[in-house]
Amino acid sequence: MNKRTLGQGNLQVSALGLGCMGMSEFYGQTDDKESIAVIHRALDLGVNFLDTADMYGRGANEQLVGRAIKDRRDEVVLATKFGIKREGTTRSVENSPEYIRAACDASLRRLGVDHIDLYYMHRRNPEVPIEESVGAMAELVKAGKVGHLGLSEVGADTLRRAGSVHPIAALQSEYSLFTRDLEAEILPVARELGVGLVAYSPISRGFLAGTVPPADELPDDDFRKWMPRNSGENAAHNAALAAEVKKIADAAGVTAAQIALAWVLAQGEDVVPIPGTKRLKYLEENVAAADITLTSEQLDALTAAVPADAVRGTRYPNMSEIGR
Image 1 (cartoon, rainbow, N blue to C red):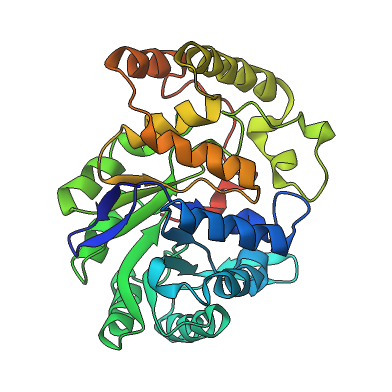
Image 2: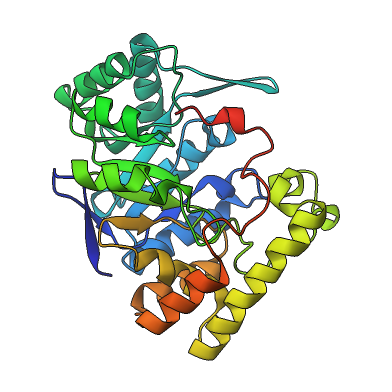
């Protein structure tokens, strides 16, 4: 698979990454054996960019990824995140320097590695100056525990302030045909600063693929059941948008998921989507999207089918989780 470069520090990753979150929770039943097989197959196909976080499965996802890459560490660009604390059913965001240092050490232990290639702040607590947090992250780079730094779901001003302390290789944010709010201000600033964009949920959690059942048919352990975009009139409206995307995909001879990924890939060489899956068949479908080159007419048709402000409903039940 072709490589793309994140940031200005020559962090080269496969054009398509693999999001590992759903292998441990959030999308119904999990199977560690199959998930490890998916990770191994991804590496075989040239997908070297693996994404996890300490809060996924309350640490279990990092342990899973660690087991999967134990004998293949040199094939992997490994990314993980800190910042979201889970205590019982409550969550909080912690960005203090002391917490960052402890979180990094804990992630290294769970992953079973001596360094993390890309270390993200998962969410920002605005009560802690971003300069203090990034300063602590920079110390991890100096110590050899971390290779490159990233931020997730931050705004343009935060990104600029962070970059004044230490180079930021990547901004991870939700980005797809269904989620384009960062195009107005955040993405231009990232490009001005030389920060790559790692696009999570590039198929909008399956909604663009047309594979997500109505909310009342989803199990309680699938968090899409509670998403405003999948509720009531929003669900019907957004499904109609996805159906238009499928028509364009059908005409191109590809799947809706593939054309959604190809659209993200076409937004720039500094954009790297990380679709998540725990199934081999979806992995191979996603990887094939890296070989699709959309025509200008197809790109125009897709953006016309889903205008930037067309999708109804917020991304999360509680948008206060997003601290910019």
